[in-house]
Image (tube, rainbow, N blue to C red; front, top):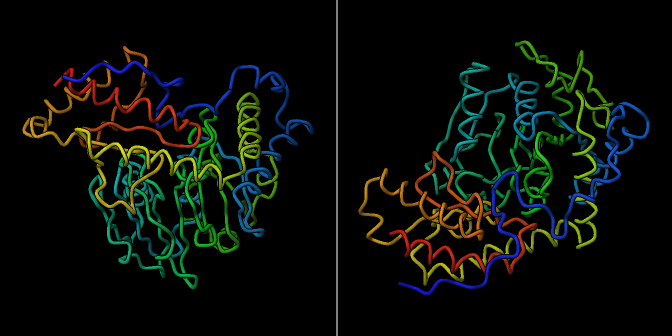
Length: 381
């Protein structure tokens, strides 16, 4: 039995989405929100455009990429891309966790596309990225939020590809080093790395993706919230703040606050460094603990959705139901102690714990929570 720790994280929010707010955030950050005003009015539209301009600048998107705010968080943004762009070529989908599998389902069972190749891997591993055929459109997640596994880099994507690369990057953008020139479509949400509120997503398009929108008409009906082009013309207003549907101006105020914070701490580069430090803190701790990373490949481990599982033989000898029950006890105990909220692994993942390591989680809080996790396991096993 180990001694109960005494130092608690100052912020116990380790959820992988919606994620912890930026350090120092309080409700006063929303005092200038344009509640009760039309998002189509000049003042509000200017704020929406400011979100687009600031995001593009802070991320260092290529100058010829366009960016828009979308309904439905990252899911809405990604599905808008699939419904609007696919059908002109064959499709390759790489998936290794739940959301990647959702995109497989969309391509096969919703859009019912032919000439589809799927490359799947179990939680904790990547498929062989070399299998992707870039004469086709290639769909993948940069970071598997439910598995704690990311692609190490974009070196496997050729510059002279014929198809489009469509990337769900929601738990990677602002936390991982991404070569955006390798990606023709990039989607993310405010509620992940930025710690913003839910329901709003973003979509960035390369010139190649724009060309597809203006030369290809999908064969299926197009829901209004997915219509980023009309009659083979990109709807330019969407990429200047004229959103397809009504956004929350409270959420807009909140994400502007988050973007101003990003700028104040040194931009995306500083956030990436901070997230990698959180991962290193866990890596330094884990060898002497009862835990191990779900992902064995250090180069593919997420620095945001950091997923760990129990390696103790007493635990691994149990059946899966008993393992899940024990993990739930750990999660409940840490919640009761007020030291870690919402760190249970994704329900479809192996029995595990998942700690958000994005830049809104302070390094000192990550250091403080780890002894509590070991203590909780020893208490309930």
